Length: 211
Ligand SMILES: C[C@@]1(CC(=O)O)c2cc3[nH]c(cc4nc(cc5[nH]c(cc(n2)[C@H]1CCC(=O)O)[C@@](C)(CC(=O)O)[C@@H]5CCC(=O)O)C(CC(=O)O)=C4CCC(=O)O)c(CCC(=O)O)c3CC(=O)O
Ligand SMILES: NC(=O)C1=CN([C@@H]2O[C@H](COP(=O)(O)OP(=O)(O)OC[C@H]3O[C@@H](n4cnc5c(N)ncnc54)[C@H](O)[C@@H]3O)[C@@H](O)[C@H]2O)C=CC1
Image (cartoon, rainbow, N blue to C red; front, side, top):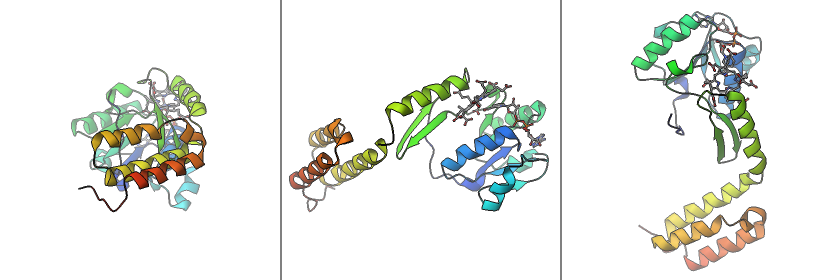
């Protein structure tokens, strides 16, 4: 199992096979990350009608075949038909694709973790399929510690990092600034953040562009 963050995906290439209860739950999770998938299924959970109206999903009403997903970047197999899930998982795996098999994870090449976001902070917990319920619980425990105030704190840290990378040439100095920025005082105190940024700008003015 190797965790990785994906970005800049072509979302027209993200598919679900099966349109039931589990599919609906998985789609709401994808939506949190701005992904609007295509779902192939002969029947759909009633809640999908609203999502289709909103334009956040594309529904294709049919039994899934290999041709439907052959060009997919990522496919989530969430039908209640084991044979269909198994067969497509094998073909997708052989084709080197990312595939989540929702009922027999070992046949896939990827799994969905339990996730919470705090702006740029993404808290992601996996139990490698041992207990999705525990993954959820641990995620919720961590999310209590790293609460909403981390949202603008992360924005502050991103600003600091952006500035330091551009205008602080010396590597040791860069590290010192970046290490200082994660001191707890900057989490709680926005005035201290401003003082920090002012000091950073005075010590390393933005005219001295680092190449
Ligand atoms: C392998 C994986 C496949 C994948 O990658 O999707 C998988 C597989 C299976 N889940 C099953 C059951 C449940 N899954 C949940 C919940 C979640 N399941 C998620 C991920 C994963 N589930 C992947 C592994 C992740 C890991 O281990 O860390 C979460 C974290 C993320 C998400 O789905 O978005 C999301 C919570 C997040 C949230 O709510 O925010 C609940 C609890 C609930 O719904 O409250 C139950 C019922 C209780 C229980 O079983 O624990 C079953 C048995 C089906 C049956 O009974 O036959 C299988 C099949 C099997 O295990 O074989
Ligand atoms: N990963 C997870 O988080 C969880 C996974 N599961 C597993 O997910 C699977 C689906 O569960 P539910 O959504 O509750 O079932 P469901 O019965 O609500 O939905 C199944 C869907 O698959 C569709 N389907 C059937 N044959 C198909 C085909 N040939 N091509 C395309 N779509 C097809 C049906 O029309 C239906 O929309 C089950 O195998 C279950 O064990 C269950 C709980 C959680």
